[in-house]
Length: 160
Length: 160
DNA sequence: GTTGTTGCAAATTGTTTGCACTGGT
DNA sequence: ACCAGTGCAAACAATTTGCAACAAC
Image (tube, rainbow over all chains, first blue to last red; front, top):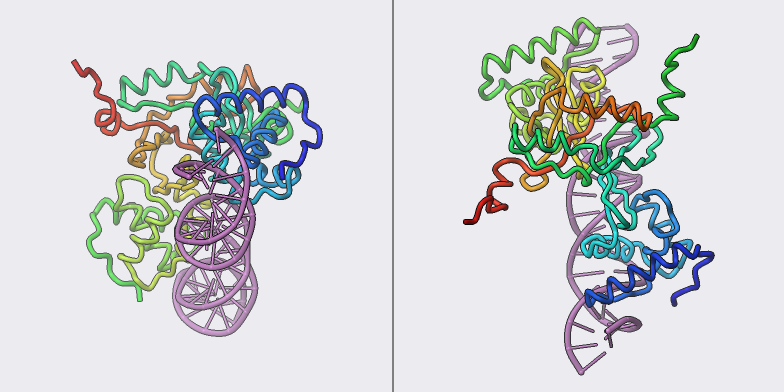
């Protein structure tokens, strides 16, 4: 079917095209569901859960089946076009794998995913490797905590 | 029924008694399933997933129902007697809340949970608070990576 | 034309819930 | 005695899988 995108920003469309080219180079197929998933992720600035991607894809192209979204996300993640981050609760967040690697924080209050500096855990990683022989994979899982706005609303830091 | 524990180490039994006393002080009930869960966790040095606790409790006292284990884990967690850590994949690991707070690493290869120094992320937490306004909760989620043995077996450190 | 991908629906897994009864205090 | 906790089974949500038709290359 390949319904036309409702309204794709130029940047988003460029990102999709770039991903398509990358897939082409890798001898991988660019199909309707994959394009739909890529478009949805390209139009989002933040990260989306699998369920949110399913919903967004449904709005984008109703003909794409849920299972296909899951399979597309898995395939695109394996191909490195899509990046996935595990949030504490059991959900996984997806985003286009653009640019430099960065870490993620997950607000346990509002669920927001915030991008953090990529070198944030470099020293910790080194310390872990030396002291515990543990090879840290900092990007794989989000750091849990409370984001600025939630922290501000819950903790009256200095009420006076 | 309250089947007698197969073989409880003195330390484990003491830990269960301590938890029982704590519950008693809080006017909370010490029931068969809760005792079973506590005993199972006390006899384990490491962390157990909910499913593993269910299995272990079944071996400990077949009369305890799955749902009761979940409810006991939730109640004991809320009461602070049991500590839970979210592993990246969507599973949660449980352990007795003993002694000092510490962090956790989760081996994405073998699934092992390793204890890490409690102050490991202190500087990172401070940096996050200052730079991003993000209040890190270091104990809530395990750091993902590869444990020593898995790293050794997968990476031929110095192939020659 | 070949092979991977999709749509579908059913299976699967892990956790939760409603309700009557049991058991702890 | 009172009420929280339990056992049970059924509900539940989210993800996965087998298979036949289809589409990308």
